[in-house]
Length: 475
Ligand code: ADP
Ligand code: MG
Image 1: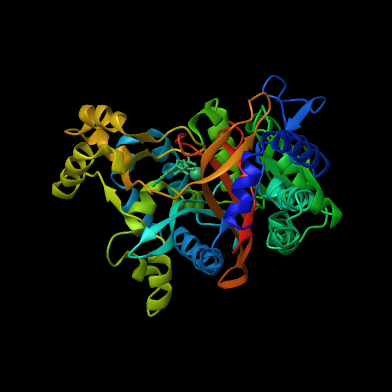
Image 2: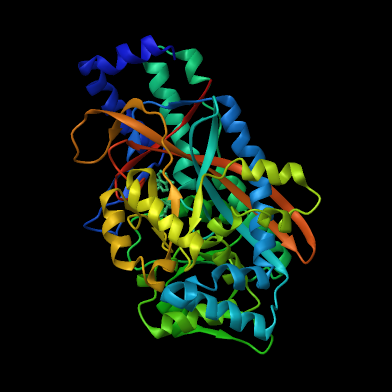
């Protein structure tokens, strides 16, 4: 859309009010839904998930950059998961101070000690980026890669239709065609189905490991529904259920509630509070030691930590995983922004000083997932001030703060007033792969997730309502 037309639209408040209603109804008819905060265990009452009113323009070259590098990220994550020496070295400092990562690492150690039984590997990840100017041109810069429970693919598969509809309603037919097709659900389900098929038991099910309170169930249902279409049965279980009714038979096959499990798909288990008791940890260990295909397995989970991301940015590290492939190394490295170790020693001291001198240029990150954990601005000084002389600082990594350009848009969120905001976007690409022994049978980029938030907010949570689901308008 020409900027002039967009600005005119954005300013016409009566039209915006009408369009917002059309957009909400379109979100409902397209299944962009979530349960309510007050009743996260019931679908009796639901609402639309946060969305933007208009799609956001993204330069074609950036989009293609993200698609092209995704299969390399898949390979990279998979290779890291098979390199115990690397993981041990990369996480050595972190696990001395971060109990959660240490606990995961302990499971990884135990699995290695017993020997991995299953040679089928299923990866569903999402690499997230923002973009900024660098030496006169714009480039994608990775925020993080999610190797565990990379979500929102279900909703992302339908938001394009909402935005196409909105553009048609305002007479922007040409632009409506610039919104590209997106169906990560289909790609993700295909990969799960492939792993299920390789497992080789028609009776066995795909088990989604889920939370007690699943406000986000409707997003997950899209994948479940797709699997059922292929006559693959899915079940939903909590760690507690696995703990109560799960067992391994003599061949280490996993049974939960008397059903054999071919694939364990974790949508829960990435936060310390997901493990409510020792029993939950025992259940995780049992699943990891079973013959079921784990998505992700414990080593792939660890490959997605922020510490590993920081270590990968150090000179020579990508070369370890892509020997003799300098072009791949270059392509992956081009997506890195500055990442700094806070390990004890001169390098870490320098990073601490740098952050204290200009906190607004950085983000301080602990080894946590799921939003709301990062530290910005003056708070960096407070936190680092406390830990800068102790090993406790090794629980964090420091990262350059990406400074994306903003675009005006409206965020539609239940119960929130409609107002124009300067918005910034985060674009994620969904990667899938299936490996059987040494053979990579699938390695694909299956779609994207675009999230847009007001530039005043730090985090980009869809469920928390900070960000809205968005579409890419290629130009
Ligand atoms: P989480 O695992 O909690 O999702 P992320 O690393 O994705 O952690 O950070 C959460 C959010 O914080 C991101 O979605 C993004 O909005 C913001 N953010 C993270 N890193 C940066 C960065 N380097 N520059 C700018 N914003 C960032
Ligand atoms: Mg994130």
